[in-house]
Image 1 (cartoon, rainbow, N blue to C red):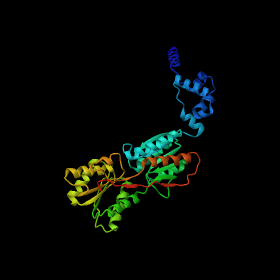
Image 2: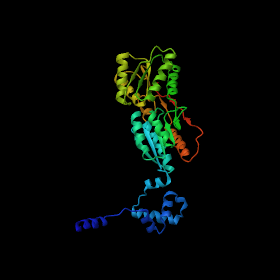
Image 3: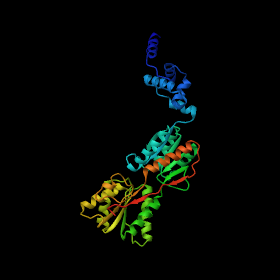
Image 4: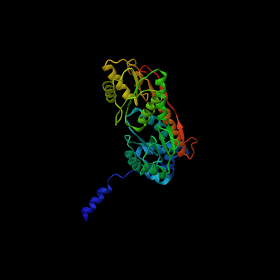
Length: 344
């Protein structure tokens, strides 16, 4: 019994967590005032707010946001699912999205799906247990269970990097099919009579590839050879793709449309290694206008999507919905543009 008592005494002497009550006592205010200072600081006088912030700094108090969420039914979290956090295409649009939502008091809970619908479905199920106030998804193609979970959650959802007439809630992006058609039109207008495709395996890249090839076949091209990879894009795969096209298809005197600038960069390197002139022997068009695209040798012709605008418009749509405002446009198409440089 004494031994148990000594253990209890030792536990009683251990540090206790700092609570809102501790901060309130130190600042000489009520807990209600502390709560108001944390959640609605503009409703607290500057002098009182300064005392409370000083008390928080001194004690190291961290608000219990879970408890606050239970009371307010708001977690102040937005869950975001993107295919790859290392791909500049997605990370740059998420940077602008994050800046906008953080300015409105929300924090981002980000997860990587790796272009897999099954992985996305599993992550959505896990993230919804955290009770986010809203969800951002990449793309418009999701599994049926995933769509049902999101619809059942009854929270705002924005799908980015694609458009559809039937979004879960709101979508902000551009048409991948129209992008492929636009590049095909560019190819025809510039007098090319041979073309090839190099593509990564994600379904949006495949839609661009298919639309590009279909438009050229309809315009009279005999064929549009292609090299497709199951995984993501890389410089190595771009080099491998050109090697296959030249060695197996004897492809010369034409243009290659790549599903990403990374693949296009690899094609340019392999062309140099083989002594092929760009754009005379092989012309190259990328996709994404990544930061290096203007600085390759030669500078890369590519398709640009305004990622900053995309992130900002997605944030605006979600924040409007979170504030109970109906978004007049459920489908927001920001478009794209072909940036002509020296490779095509």
